Image (cartoon, rainbow, N blue to C red; front, side, top):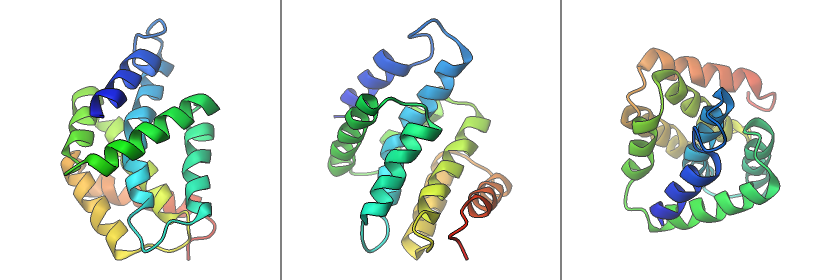
Length: 157
């Protein structure tokens, strides 16, 4: 299934797939993070409709994906997450393709999902630390991304 995500990544939105503009690279970053966003959504005790809607909205609005792309991506990512034995397969793809700044952006997106329900669970915090470590994000960048996500979410205490 990782091949399905990789193929979607390479054929639909990869850098250079539609002419190599700077926005292609941005779209590729969003596609690569979708599986991790879904995993973040599953970290706390329950998956609510609001969390699912939040991830979907994020992929549509923030990532600039069309509805058909979001549906395909979420289905592929959900299946891959179900079959995954670890997160390395996701983070290694990101590490091979993105700059340090883009990896910090991935961490910030994950924090946004964690804060979407207005509560930060211990499992979400653990997941974030693990992913930040796998992406080689410094502690200062990790804390900065967390603060920006918290400040952007009015539901966060």
